[in-house]
Length: 245
Image (cartoon, rainbow, N blue to C red; front, side, top):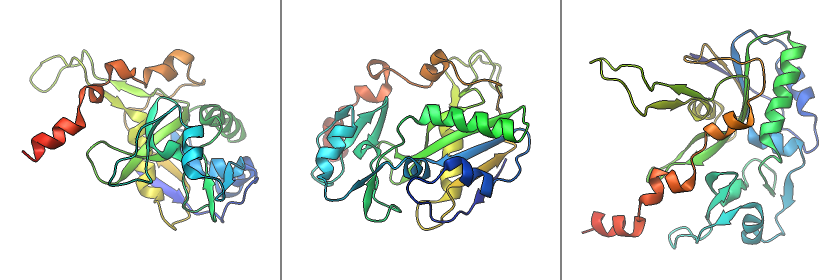
């Protein structure tokens, strides 16, 4: 697998995302996956809010549910938005020139439109599309990548029913291809002043390309209901007491 990043100019609010892609991706080969940072999608959509608006109120407005901020980080709220647990409803302040930038309006629909556009423009049969964002992992420092929109390939590689090296059938193992690839792209694109918000992932393993957008059922497959999520069973306050016990 090989990842190439593309440096762009400083994207301005209201620019055409398709014009940006035409400028910086003049040619795409078959079986490539294009990853685009959600921030430039948001900037093109004018999803910017002046900083004179109260950030906490904005977080509550943009989230489906907002948890209480920890005392150690009073300005960071864990929120639920679009079936994802993310900090501050995805609202960011970096690389957006003294404004708050919100997540794209409908990243799944945008991913589909970009996929359709690039596939037609470059006469491609197999093309993958990802819109990425950074996210945190419970009990781990730093950010990794997460996909908030995709198109053109199956989201899950399923090992269930396959055998391990000792012949034991695997029962629960699946690879989340979306977030795995988003993490690769996020690492390559960077989080600072790299100015490389587009990445081309070549020769990614285990990819099953599709010549259509994901169905409603396929979009739901990547998600887990909160009642069935393993982390929902954790009492972190109790865990803290045990770890310091």
